[in-house]
Amino acid sequence: MIRTFLIGIILGAVAAAGALYAFPAVDQEREPSLVSVAPNGGNIEMFHVNVPMDRVLVGAPSEAGAVPDGLEWPDDASLVGVRTEMFKIRNARDSVVGIAARTTATRGDEDIIDWVLHLPARGSVFASMESNLREGGIRDGAIRSGSREFSSLGGSLTERWIADTSGDEDAPQGRIELQAIYRGQPERLADEQEAVE
Amino acid sequence: MKHIVSLLVGMAAGVMLFCLGLVYNPFIADRGVSPLAVAGADVITLTFSPVPDETIVYTNDGESVHLPNPVRVQQLWEPPVRQTTAAVMQMRNARGEPAGLGIKFGSRSESTRLLRGDVIQDSAWYLYLPEHGSLFIHQSEDYWPFLRDVAFSAWRNSANNWRGGWFGDTTAGPGALGTAAAKGASGELRSLDMEAVESLSVKAFSTDIGLIAAEGRLVIAMPEDEAAGEVD
Image (cartoon, rainbow over all chains, first blue to last red):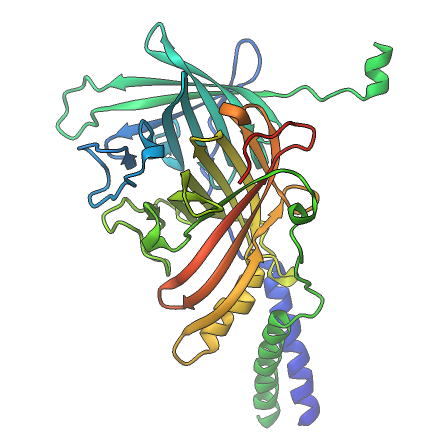
């Protein structure tokens, strides 16, 4: 009987190890990426934010419409002129696929508008936007950095506010449309190759 | 019959022994000193509170140990973001003075391997520091040492809490030396590629409400060939 007990211990330990090996401790839910090919190279992916439904945070000093209720924004001189918003972001099928933060600030004569898009199953994208809008109310920006799936990608990000004109009672006020164009960053040639060329 | 009972009891004991071996695995070594501590580069040191009640905003799926703050903040309940947390925190410099704003997104990582003692979270920081500019940091964090030393100890305690002093680096990559990658976007940090390390100092923890007293630290190292600006 002792021998059976010892065999049981070994079996139990092996079964536990096998279970840990076979079943992932974390399994992120994935929505299929809806990507199309850009005419001049790269891949296009569209995201949008339904306003106000997808707003998680609107924070700025002395702002009346702060979100969420009960928000205590720091009363700090260094944060004057800083506005941070956080949203859930949706793909082209209107499914929530991630979360994003948009921060605007004025630092001397420099206007800062930055986006961070965090897609849990894929990685994060960081983009800096230009301060001026171009025709059509579109703001251009450049993807500066990314993690995991986006770590080797550059490209651009544009944002545009589209007001809702449907007049439906439960329709959002509008949406922020984000268009990301991913382009692979050319690999740096080895020094010898560069010298040859 | 008694052989079957003996086998089942043995299997249960085997599973328990395996779990104990996992927690006290001598082959899983702590990472030791932060690579930035011995690098000699100029650094920006920032501190923040990771305790949800002390953040400006903290949100998750609403069913985790840590409760969202403020209470009415929108929760991340949709399946693709259910294993994600988002926090906005006031950052302080090494002297404890306000230094800016930090936004942190963290998601449980599929590269978690309990057998190897890896409990990984993929996280991204956005920092706006009026004195320096803005930057983005992305990293993999390993919470195994924290879970083993603090959370497991609290779970074993009959009161489900832990008090003491625990300090450790959570950053485990993607840098070869276990550092996070940082990219400057504006101000004096514009276009700089930097490294960073996040660490956690915990004084009190409860398995019912999570972190009670803790401080986070973020050390950002300037590139050594760049003339760094003001350093805290």
